[in-house]
Structure formats: structure tokens, C-alpha cells
Amino acid sequence: MDKVISLTPGKVTILGYHHIYNEKVMSERLGFYPDFEMNESDFINEIEQLLALDVDFVDMNLISNKNLSLNKPSVAITFDDGFSNYLDIALPILEKRGIPSCVYITTGYPDGEIVHVAGILHDLILKQKHVNLLVEGRCYSESCSGMEEKKAAYETLVSVLDKCAYSLRDMKQVFESSGIDTERYRSFSLSWDQIRQLDKHPLVTVGAHTVTHPNLTRLSDKLARQEMTQSLMRLNDNGVAVSHFSYPYGCYGAREVHLCHQTGMKSAVTIDPLAEEGEMLALPRRLSNGQREFVIAEKALS
Image (cartoon, rainbow, N blue to C red; front, side, top):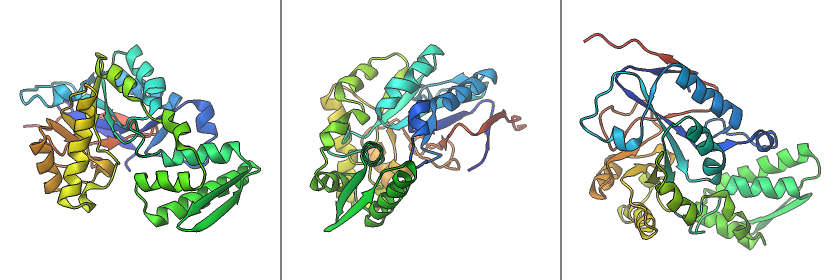
């Protein structure tokens, strides 16, 4: 991805984040996913860089206003999935500076239908000297005594699971069939109580991100519709009415855009920085990792 992100006067740049970790947790990471996680200090530096450029921070409700008129470069901050470090780390940083943000909830997390795979693997491997994982009838037994062994075990198990192409719902069953209590890890994601509180927060907009985080474009019409409508239903059941959506993995097509329209979404975001501008149900978005420089682009002459 580009190391420089240009911010254009009169336009909104939507930035996407997933995990913000404190320095201790980040230093213990066994695998690093640069466009999906960053440490707290890098996030602060990125926000301070944007403040120094005197951009306007806007929320998704404002962006979906068809009569929106902007002069300065504008930025919208968004978070996918609904992990607890959004509430614990990211939100206090944004609150302190009066910056709005949108968090898109994958409802299977607070409902306990799916699990945070990387989080569970990290915890198991860091805290134990040996990890056994039963995958498709085969037991993978990994020694985790020292840090190098832990990193190797993590890489091996991630590779095994990636090749199986399991859904997150399937992954819960894999862990539980291996004797792992997945209920212990519910705190990795926001609870419904926390989501309801966030919905009342003046700087927070809550959006939807499906039930189990599948690639919608690979599902049948029936399943794709279920993933979208049931996530909206679960949010609504918990008193959270949403009108903004994020496509899992940023994958979408004409069918997904149509489903968003049918379900009353005012906006939907991708992770495609080159998506067509002006299409409210396929908005371009840039994933950020704390290592990018922001610059103000010259406004094109009309």
C-alpha cells in the first residue's frame, strides 16, 4: 500500500482500523498484520499528524448527508469488527481530542457464535508450554517453551487453519473440540452492554459488519442476505438502530450494494481506496497502520 495518503480539500478520506494495542501487548505479538493492527503510540502519532494538518474530522452520519458541503480536507475514522481494544484504547484517545468515530459490529462476537482466532492462539501459545489443536481429525502438537518456539508454533497453526479455509463459526468448533474453553475469550470483543453504551456516546456511530464476517461475494443470495439482515436484527434487538455498513474483507459487488440499499443503509464502506467516489454504498476507504504520511493535496482546478 502507498506510504503517503493525500487528503484533498473538499473531500472526505475514510480511514479504517481494526486493532489498537498497548505497547506491552504489541511487543508480545507472535505474528504481525500491518494493516490490521498497530500500537497505541503510532495511533496517537497518526491522529496528531492529522490534527496538525487542520483537517475536519467528520462522522459517517454527516458523510451520508447528500447536501454535505466541505471546504477543508476531511477525515472519517472507522473501526471494523467491534474488538474491546476500541473501547479500552482507541476511544479514549479520540475522546480526548473530540474526534468522532464509527465502529462496525460483527454481531457473532458478542453473541458468542464466532471467536477471535488470532487472539485465542496468541493467548494459548504465550501462556502454555505446549499446545494441541485438533484439525480435521489430525492433532497438531506444538512445543511453546521459548519465544522462538512460540513464534514458530503460531506460524504453523495459523498456516494449518488458513489452508482449511474455515469460517469463524467453524473455528469455534475447532477450538472447542480441542478442549479449549472459548467462553474465556469473549472479552476480546465488545459485549452487548458495551455496544449499547457506545450507541449513546456523542462521538460514536455504531454500524453493522455481518454476523460471522464472511466474504459476502462467495455466498449464495440467501446466505448473503441472512448475514446482512440478521446482523441488523441483532443490533436492533439490543436497541441499536444502524444505517451504516462495512463489507467484510472489503469484498462487494452489485448484489451486495443492492442488499445494502434494500436494508436501508445510508452508507457502506470498502477497503478499496479506488472505489468509485460518490457511491454511498461502496465508499472508498484506506486501511492505516501508523506508518503512513498524510499530506494535503492541491485541489484540482475546475
